[in-house]
Image (cartoon, rainbow, N blue to C red; front, side, top):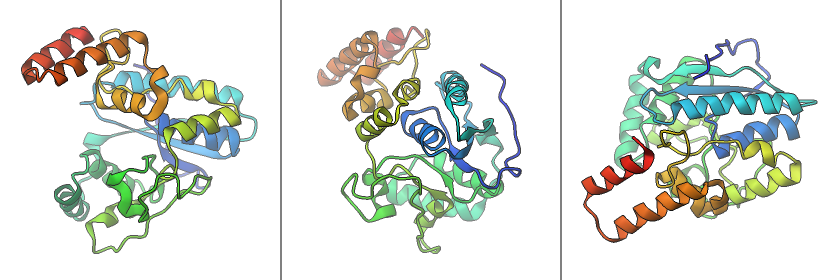
Length: 264
């Protein structure tokens, strides 16, 4: 894994600050702001040592950073700021809201350390690239993907501070109104499809560092109309696992097959 760059974000008050994972949604946003909008972007990546795709994601970030920096004429992609999930300063008020949200909405663990990092480092309003789905209807009040549109200005929620949902007031959300397929169309129109296709999505890469084909992001990539991003070997692995699921194979058997398919 490449050695991370560390950079204080304070000298860049006019930059767009974004949590960049190297995935399709956040990469689309980063590249669009720099190459199309001509803006300065300061990307943040939060290291989670328990993440199986950590190496692939960080390598992806550096590779795309080089591609974008070589193509930009007006905008600028600043050095990546790497922070650590396990070093986030514990905030009891945020944790109270988070635990209430877990009980109410079942949100993922990453949202508490992202919130704590945002508050600790003064990144209020940092962009978080999530897609419009039932988990985030409360941010927009809309149940129709695409109705909020997409543009340079992200949606910034203003939820009552006495509600657990106000945890999300810390962030802004630029991709709630656009689908992955629509991102692909815009990328083609704006000339950065080849850069976007270098993004990473798999959470359980094989020993060879290739997409597994059966983790949730791999399945979602195919379901959202981007199945061409899965190499043939990954599609085959996905077919095998889905067949085992349809046949109601025991969980332990499926886990064993997945490990064998990944070469682990």
